[in-house]
Length: 306
Ligand code: AMP
Image (tube, rainbow, N blue to C red; front, side):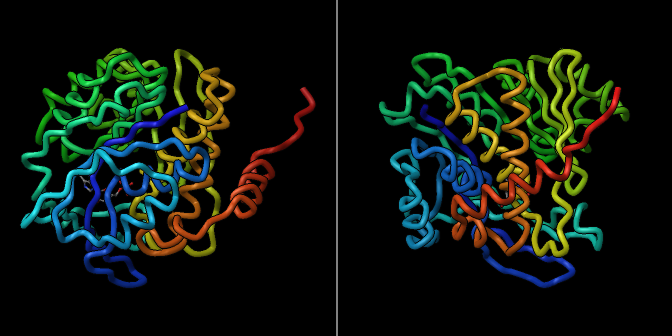
């Protein structure tokens, strides 16, 4: 099944207790599409970059089967830029800078071959752009998932609420769920957010795993306890990409399959944090992924005599 994704393709300055990287490759759509590419080869990407973005990275993406026909390249302009600094716990971070650059005036134009995806992953970027992507589709996808962040809650809440009504699954972190709902309890937050539109809600809790809500059902997936975490940037997007890549490959929207999707997404996120930027996502293979999924199965598998 085909997967369409939109999101930023960007440069990041990242500071962690382990080191600094300047102008590292980042962006929500970069992480999403690379993660998804390990589960499906039918990926179309829509985004915008300036002519400062390295051709080498675009070739890396193409060689993983990601179609970039919908990636606009603006001559003489700069790509989206974000700078963040992680706290010692590596879970919390402060955004130091966000420069929209090419994103400020981005109007996504879907090539004709992009207009009938079965699966749509609206990665983190301007909610109005996410809406414009949905509006150009010729039929409704089987599953529309959306990721966003506090930046858009602070700067574009009206459009964000509009797009949230149009989707099936919202993927956000715990602090964002609290901000969006005004509830501290994640269970209460989930109930309120599902009333806003989405039937499914995924709340990511960084190193503490992720929760999947649907009606009154809840599933919890742990994050893999890792001895070393170098750079959590992109873990959330990688999770979303792994999840949607798995869903589009298996094409089964049952709650049980969504649970598997959450574990497959968590497995991809556990790789992402092991190296800076997208490095780790460029060097994986099926053997590494299968053995990581087995570690997840072992982590949560137990026998209860009830
Ligand atoms: P994550 O760590 O999964 O939340 O994603 C980090 C990535 O999101 C970085 O590579 C940034 O380039 C990108 N990013 C940061 N802020 C924004 C924003 N306001 N809109 C879209 N993408 C962003």
